[in-house]
Image (cartoon, rainbow, N blue to C red; front, side, top):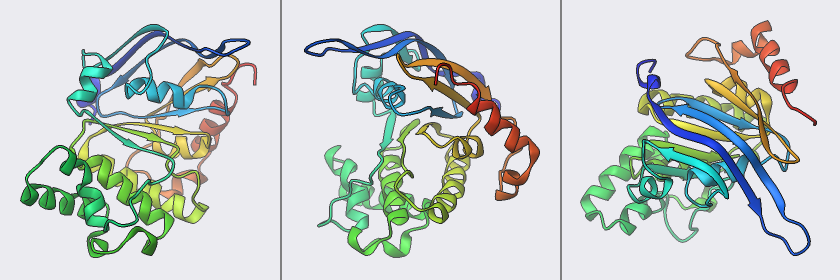
Length: 259
């Protein structure tokens, strides 16, 4: 993993985003400069209105910044998107109720016109990765919220992206489910070596998961600090009881400007 992280995957330089409005423009982001390295687990943390999701959407080519430059593997976000280098997991699993778990995971492969036998094989592989093989023939309504999110992760990974973008994927779940999914996600990350960018407003969650944390402050959205997380891996829940973990949570909390 350390060797992978020597290569810059996403480079952002002086990124700004201004939304037009009838009376007054809204500055969502200003002067964000950041490098994310290949294989890193990076969290974007901050209060509501700080531009976390806006920055993620710029990386995903769902928004075009009004200032600055961003490259993904040396290409534009649009080129990276067209090459399917991204997988995206949203706050809600956004599954189709009339499709089985297997068919939900197959869906992006169907859109890509992957042959049926190949997409079935790939979907089964992804369900095995997220420990849902035995639920392949179930429908979303038969699953818990945490299981639905795991299906969403499996679907995002089905196209074999190099980068996984996650927008507060666990925010609607109870604490017990969240903790289980934290460990599941870290296991998936370890097995796949993906670059993960994870949006959250939960500082402890970010510390537990990440290699580094980007603290964004609002009004306008700006990068206040980049905090390395040097806790040992693999991580277990026991790390949360250490002074090092507590100190990192405090360091991130105190890094926001003007909040």
